[in-house]
Length: 167
Image (cartoon, rainbow, N blue to C red; front, side):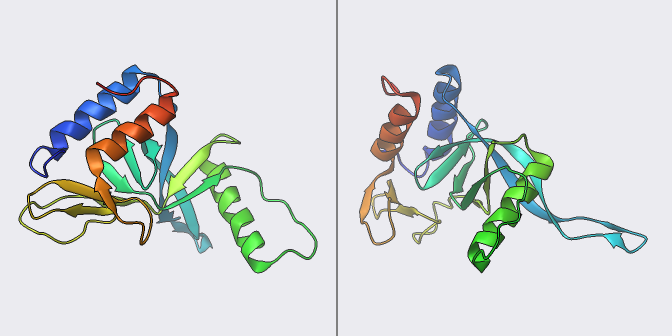
């Protein structure tokens, strides 16, 4: 088990292993408001914010920063379909926003929350929890129970690279 005190070092090590293993990563984006110029423009845009590995309920970037997985889309031009539902139209609009900043077909993660552990607090940090012993646990699904974060991340990393797990 990895302790809350050792988590940062552990995440940097895992990020290095994923990078060296050639694990496929995905884009990370943040929503921003486009600046209006002379009253023209404005609106929401997705801005590139780095690359991450999606490891179940968490995203890990190359610097070892951990994010709670938010929403995901694939960059694609918006198409008009007849009689679409409101939710389908919204998903199409988000794909179009992603296409403005990313290559067509690129998987884009957005609405991800940066997770920072404060070992002095015993409550939750997104899907992460700190046990009474100071070990990091993860809630792998809402209401799905808590499991050892180190084992969870190793399993997800192994699945991502499609082979031998991290040492």
